[in-house]
Length: 98
Image (cartoon, rainbow, N blue to C red; front, side, top):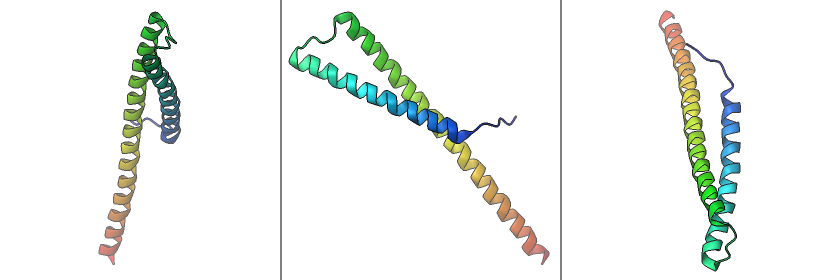
């Protein structure tokens, strides 16, 4: 079974999603650390629990995007190696026929 899809487009989308989520995680992480250090009490307890849930979810999504990008790149590498080996085999057959 061969699925045809634009690997580069999926890779770009995953990278953009990861970058946006990392920025959000960084901002929320800095606010959470400042909240604890300076006792600002920016977020109520219920909101802090929800933020922890979102941060955990963001981390899992980022990890899934990372694995997806790795798999796509392995696919691209294997297709490139297949083309290189086909070219090499064709050139060897031409050399033997001479």
